[in-house]
Image (cartoon, rainbow, N blue to C red):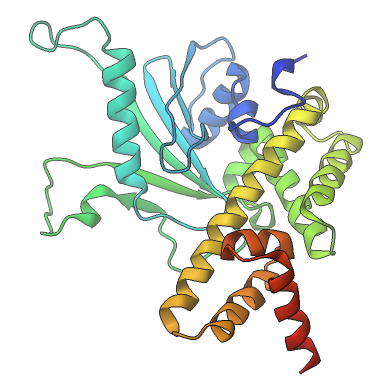
Length: 293
């Protein structure tokens, strides 16, 4: 049984991170990403780097032998600040963990080779989503030979794309399939929590590659997916509200437009009321009034 202490309660971890706490799965994924051939017995060391932006431990930060992997998942949209975030995490991780107890003023310190990845698993994929993000793209003054650079590879792991990496990594393909099932059930009209439970049960019954992981961490995985989707909905909801507030100065008209957009992405009235910071009855009355017009 894996990590049974993760089950049955709310926490700020993520399914992807829990999945890749297993060294053998980390090696399998890394071999797929980097076309390596590390054996399952290769040395893997995990580090905890807090995602201060989202307030959760969502990124995967570890070393495989002499290589440093920092991997982050984005479920909803691309983030052009990823190279900057990766730089922060790598600096914090290396300086606080790997260099602990050593002096940079004495011997030449050898560092593990960094490899940065973003796994994109959003509902939509912008045509211009880059395959590579660079820190230098954000420099105010362009520099063809920057003194400081961070290169982040962006991998589309949506199940519908049937990407090369998914074919190479059974564990990542299994994870992507579960997310695909959740989205499919949500489109069929199931609530978020029911969609998550049905997707996990279906994946277990079909005995996909990570079925044992899902079964052994069943309650925890449901809780984590619920937390992730709740966080995603709230962030997207606030983005929509902010966008509508910027377009017009109205009151009910502005709110109704935002509410309509939030309903379109499947958000429930209670959650909408929380985001708008208005009473639930006010939101429902506005929706009802609009439908009767």
